[in-house]
Image (cartoon, rainbow, N blue to C red):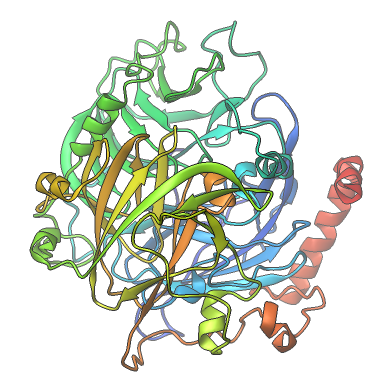
Length: 607
């Protein structure tokens, strides 16, 4: 079924419990996750992927070998409290970050190295956050060590509260799609290649929901590859929530013979427009309404094809199957835009507008926040550069600085007043000096209004994401940004989102209201650029004591200069289910894994 059941207890599906009696105020939901390795062959080649294996809260015991890739979807509602207990069953540290979830006044839960010490192998850590004043389509992923290239991602749906109607008819069901480039190399080999200055190259294929392509062309697609089938009913309308969770490749999404009515992107309702296809760049999320209005003379192709890549590899292809379909899909795929036409893509991006009359997380219209009338307090022109050698290591830079991750997270250093961990001196423009490696932060003004211009001097499309906020995309163009470029800004209905694309040799301008205190990560979503240093943190300090700001969590993991404060977990797993059930499930899993995949895990341990 294409829909996601929010409350269920069946094998292979996340169990969600809504507690209404034991907690006052907004509801709580609980999830227990184990992140582990799985053998999968999405392109017909067996390899490790990251698996989110669910251990349900009651007696629903899920066998990890048949677990979920992609991971489970968190299906919640505005203002709910989310508790996710993550056990790290990998052989290296782990953090989960929540792309687009703002963590209001709670950057402790952001899941990046500037705010959290990593979860060591064999340990568990519990995230607890509120999806405050948000709606929309988001996703989560592992933020360390190139792990996203191996999976570990899943969806986040934040539904409207009942008192706030949708700005469109309620769809018959949701369909969540993860589209991504895919490399058959392991994430460890990929990150070693990047460290050695090697280009990622053309992906080996494109996945849809972790599946390889339907065999639409026998010359391009080998036989025996499992593919995604979306079963639908004729006449129904479905909300397709589509996420590019890949690591470097912009993808064009389309459904054969069906229009895509854009209604939402990354937490903002948009002006409703029909598209035949949509360029979705790395880290971006969109919602489309798709009405099943065809004759069903055959099945239909769902396509995700790479953009700006000279590739003979297959596109990602799933199947849209009507209940009354009269035969399989056949013939050529629906045409994509011209492969290298970035002007088309930029024009399409500019056409996406904010629905200023719709309510979202709050009853008042989105457009009641008149961002175009607010005085800008800080301006940063952030210029990137392709990878280059700095002190013998390959690095990428923003304004001539490649970010150096300190051993003590920035947020902890700030909390404990540890000197020398970072500097609040990130330059507001490209400096006329040799590039360097440093831990330099943007010193933002609390409740200020910041203008950021991204200037892309690289040769590929780059996506940039800001944690903790939604920003307004007010302009983009080819060439070099100047102050005269402000004359082209959209100061009324530029869409608010958390991830924007910047085309090569072009600029993108955003405006952001700095009303969320904390330390927040601004990063390249293209994994190779991010891994080599293309990130910076914004420090947004409330000068007054704010009792509503979330304090240091009781379960904080300590590292770096604060390592002495950490108590060893001694490989104890603290799940919310009964200890006897947890112990039983682990024992059963270990026995089954050793029986079925003993040689594989012996190899993993040896490596």
